[in-house]
Length: 132
Image (cartoon, rainbow, N blue to C red; front, side, top):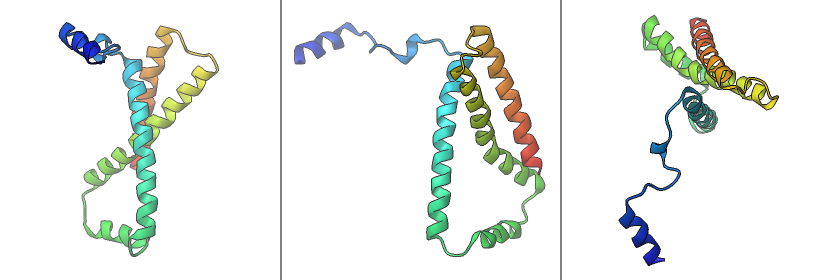
């Protein structure tokens, strides 16, 4: 085994498949972001649930605390947008993945068109929900 690793280390070849051999594309980046938002949403829900069990007080007391900070409307809107953006992205992109499971939109041109549509829908729906 040592001879195997010495030979491979001496050749200076990248481990296959290495990330540098791929050219980055919109569908590739959206797939990575879909996985990331899924993990972030799962972690956020878990953290919220554990904190609801362990922290003193109730949700209303924490909501009153945030209101007492007198944060400006721009900061509150930005925070709400940042919270809802991953949810909207993951939801819209999940619907896109369900369409792929049905065999629709799998051509390269459709991948890019649906990708741009998902990004536009994500921004618009996030902005709308944050305004509520």
